[in-house]
Image: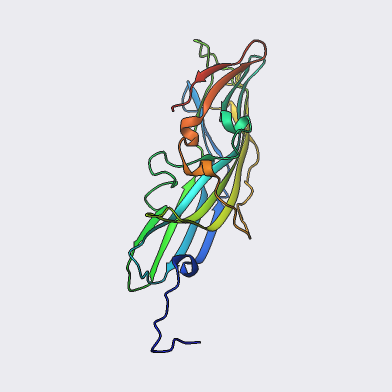
Length: 262
């Protein structure tokens, strides 16, 4: 029914009016690439995860400011670098590993809780008279360096024999009221990145490493029902600051090689 002229229509709330017009997400089809140009470290670059959303916000009647964008959390991390019969180094998130938390922020470390603050977010400042239509997008990939030699040794003799990595993430499209902190989850995506690299340290540099699996990653899932944002996904520390590099020898006690940054 239309409005009766003599009765003023109450405008819809932001919660009831914001519309997600389109969401696209994918992981690039190219395999992980391996770089052996350094005699000190092996580098690899995974394909990119990408998420892109078009959002429509009808006119905002009140003096409200809303930011719409992407928030990401890491739910699971296994990242092992094996050095023959010596042991392995492992990047770990201790609280996540020990089950104290279910997720950790993957913010850029500056614009909490957002993944970033360029293409990743858009802010609507009310009151507005027209529809606001915009796009928010993000991408993520891994590009680490792994030492050829045992990380707790002064020797750089190549002993790296394998790399395994398996990480899972939840990525949310979210609207947050800057004054009240009211938070609306508009879309939820889950994705995973896995890799296994075999290394023969006896071979000459440039011919040591080969990608074993997978050549193509599982594609992300857009969930039919949104999941709430974990409280740890909204606050410090982020995964980059919380991660610890451990050395876990075949015999003897594990030791911290690189402590957390926070």
